[in-house]
Image (tube, rainbow, N blue to C red):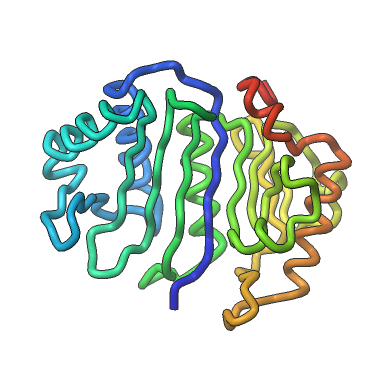
Length: 239
């Protein structure tokens, strides 16, 4: 069964071109090779049923496809990297120097064949991303939650299941959250360690988990650590 876990990372603007941005994204993918569950052979398939291009084995061809593609899109660059198997595990996209915020997004399509949906699997991912490039804000969890259950104004970011904010918080600051711990000069916050989904038809659906996430986000908003889209557009949130 396909699962619903989305990653959204808002980054300060880098103001660099395609070659630098592509090298930066490959540096992240290289770091992820040392993270349990994300040591996959990142690849892309530009045509349906066409050839797969691996970022490790066909790097020049991989980059040339995106170099030509992005040249036609007015400097709105994007690289994506699914795991090369019959069924995709993950897709990551990095956009920079475009019409909007520099942004890293990702989706988890199915449980890892060995590690499933273990909480520490995703903490390892977030740790690597925050170490790679200090975000303005990071949110991870069910996309349906953001669409249907987000308790704040739509312009204000939340954290869903697991998030990172560029501020120092203590567990006593967010008593509604199960986990509040320092990470790379900011704070990792998890509503709970147990995996959950926000789509009612999913066997891991939990109304209690949704309500707990809402309580955590309301608390974080009261603390002033959740940015609006306008605050993120400035590019200096939490600096």
